[in-house]
Length: 612
Image (cartoon, helix red, strand yellow):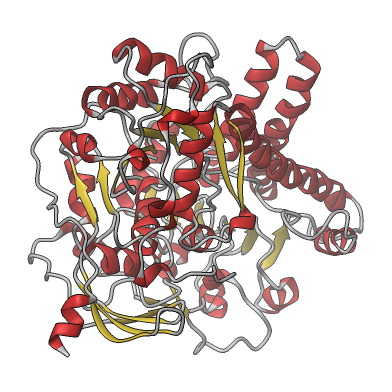
């Protein structure tokens, strides 16, 4: 049995994660079973050999001497260990055990977190995927396709590093760095800041071997693939590289599900023979777990624009229903009923028709701004104005929500305590970037309240205060609590900012129901316990993680937060509030009649209030 087990080991290059040099780039960044089993065989990319002879001397294109010209893709480097790069690398590694995946980032603190029990990104399911690929793992195999059964050993094939020389080992490099909106110069507030992309390309050019495939994973403006090609050509003249566009379509809070069962995988290429071949190599990697019918090869311009348009249209639906919520509040209509009625039309559908505070985060607003800037640069002012209004409506919704809270207190919040439930831009994530709560806090602080108390089940206190300080400056009236009942104690008003399941109420709600913070386990399980994870019919015996030192800051910050989230006891909150007791429901998660029974007045988005 031992010989059989050794023969079936998954072999991946056992590179460590050491390395003292820092990457010079900027910060990081967001079920159908395939015909073959990725767990017990090589990637389909192994079968895709590219022949340089397919490029004719008269075509004007350089013959592509890419990785598959001499064999399969064996090494991938993902530049950027943020919300896109980390999860993407982990899922690539999970489904391609014969490929070594290195994740490169210039921030040693971020890299250290990826190698610790405290990952820098909170996503349901992510912890187990990382542990299964980062650490040695025993697998119980029962594959009817290959007829392999028994216990196998899966060697690590996911590594995190600050060492830029790992790029030189890569057959394919994914660029997954941050691409925020410019805050200065031409296009400020609309154009994309390409500093991180340009620096990542320069670093890649300094180390990449000829024929390396460069893959755009970051959200970028149209024409970036061409920009990258030109930059590579100037830095490494005469050296062949292919550049592909492979945009991510991840929703925070469900990123692992989006990666493991994607609706579609777009691969944009140059359209040249070598571009098509490079696209086939990338498609071969994805085909280990994604059905071929969901992998679409198009040109790079279309791929880049499709990403912006997808987010713009989703955001458009949110702003559209939020505009209707304002009408509902002035009439007798209820926005939830309107949404349900129109969502039953198959031409419209129910998705993204939930009224609330609008969209936040680092994607929708930025991508709409990029789309408007593109339209402006093309002289299409009417098109730019049309999409600009989606962001205008989004901002107006938050302003209107905060304004209602001020109006309920006759325009005087002096001496009042206001409590916010939720800070992250959406539920199920600890990402505080461009949080909706920040704009609400900014408007409330203008009225000089005594205190603004904040509770969020996932966001760290220092992240919350940093975001508030960036926009609001002075944060002396802002306090972050690790307990929702302390946050709401003696409050004059409670504002529900996120639609966390924990915040919901219903008549006769039982306090025994709980919500786990991971789809496959609690937020922080004991690292000394040998965990068992079952995924897609395969059982992984995860290696116990090292115990954190006694002074671990991450352990301290989470020690006051339960690993299992109990639903709030609204009766307890209501009892400890000050009169007049107001709750402003920005997400439509509360049963209004039940709250009124507790003696609390409710002002909900998209619903007319009977209280003066």
